[in-house]
Image 1 (cartoon, rainbow, N blue to C red):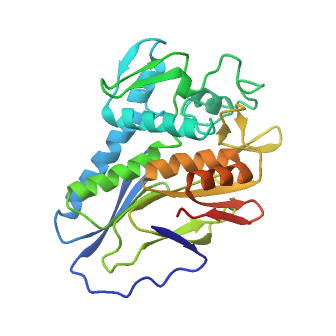
Image 2: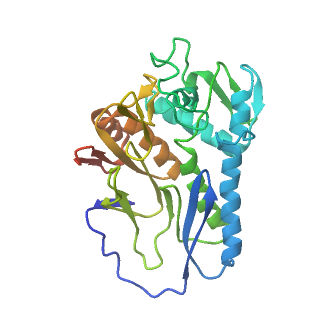
Image 3: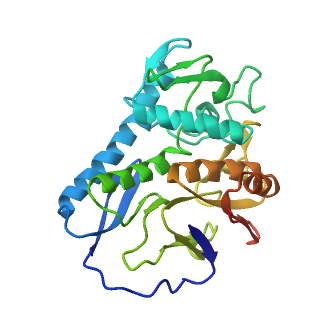
Length: 324
């Protein structure tokens, strides 16, 4: 459940609760994870923190492009045509990435690693590079992940049918937030908010029955402010934008978000997309896909698929669709 407002909601009438609020955080994926939980003392805070850290460490070990020994980079380095064993969590994320890639008509693609690096972003960017590795965008033999990666979930293995550099930066942090929430459930926590670098997952509501109030960041490169508030209960939320990660190339500012269909950075006036979904993983990936599509095409697809979205143009104009 969610709703959008320009002012912080008053929330439901407060009810006394025996639960204590505990806030925890730690390092992961070049950023930090956070957890705000209400607990009746099921586990001490230090044990909860270790459980959360273990959950995100598992995701980082499997899905990081920055770690040479990650399972993802092991697949990237494998020869074309060879089956490679993969852990179940990575299989789930690869499968979800391929499914969303198909549903978005290629606007989301987990095989954009070379394109991202070619434009000077990500773990494998070449220092000082000022022009893309592929000046004309995608080469003729480049294939999207749904066509070039075969995932066998039953036998927990994957096989590349073409040279492919997988990059899960548009989905892994959302999945990590979901893993934090599942770790909390295993510890007996039924009320909490979990996040990694702005990708958030809410479990339940607050003990008083009110929703988790999430500030929607205004897309401004020079300052941080709120464009509104999202109320969240048992859902995930993620935002993709052009205003935090960018670089100058040839005197122009380019976004780190690459359009897999053209092989070039996006070039329209949509500054941010916030998606609310059942999981943070889905919200993360769809926020990227809709940002790539742009304001008109993105809103049309969100409406057709009944996705809950808030889009903000560079002018500050807001567009939204609330799932029925």
